[in-house]
Amino acid sequence: MAGVKIVTDTGADLPRELLAKHSIAVVSLRVNFGQESYLDGKELSSAELYEKLVTCKETASTTQPNPQDFAKVYEELTADGSKIVSIHLSGGLSGTQQSATIAASMFPEGVIQVIDSRQASMGLGLLVLYAAELAERGAEQAEIVEAVKTMSSQVSTYFMVDTLEYLQRNGRIGKAQAVVGSLLQIKPVLTIDDGLVAAKEKVRGKTKAERRLLEIMREDMGDRKIWAALVHGNVPDEAERIAAKIRADFNCTRVVISLIGGTIGVHAGPGTIGFMAVPAPE
Image 1 (cartoon, rainbow, N blue to C red):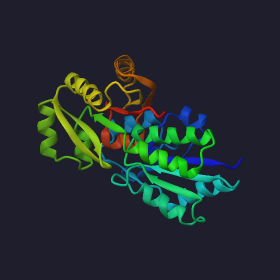
Image 2: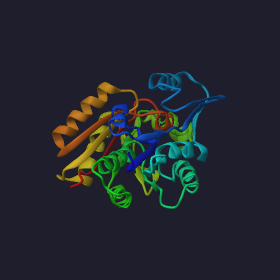
Image 3: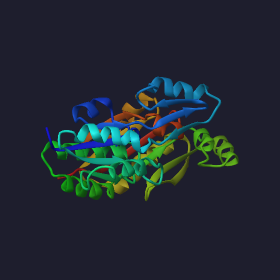
């Protein structure tokens, strides 16, 4: 049935059940370990990903999809006359959105609208979920694009990494900085600022960092009704515990808990906790 269909990439970290429920199409980035390359979410399970991150001596990396990967998905989805809203990882973090834009240019003007979310992980995922629900309610393509762009400017995203090792491996911080940080038990609280990863605060100790993660979000969101997401690097029990605090301390109308996939996980590492929130749409 013709309408508006939603496309994203594996950087959104949306749980499989939500992708299926809302018929959201996902284009995979590749996760690379040395000479081995896997389609994120298809050829590499989350369990295998985190095992490899711990055991593999070679630095893991990611590769953006090529335009043909997007064109294939777009062709299938538009065959019935549908239009597409394609929402992707921040252009400041990945060339994924650029590949999507090239693919969209192969189709008649206006059929596919590509959005740079300026976000990552469930900061992107919440936008995609909103777009899918608008599409289900019969919203026009232009209305969805405008609503998503408005919401994108309102998303707050904060990460707490468990170890500085993976940031150092991927060149986000220097080796000396990583060694000193580990010795002093420094837990940086990271954010997405204008589409780029930035340090929000440096906190000593995991307990203090977790507390600051929630306090900073409280400063951003106050008592407003919010959609919240809690993502984790293969620490489900810890994620459930923190999510319970979020439900108790914030005015949440939606809370999504999700495992961080390979696209984000190779850079953040195991044990990472991320908290994303946005004012709940009317």
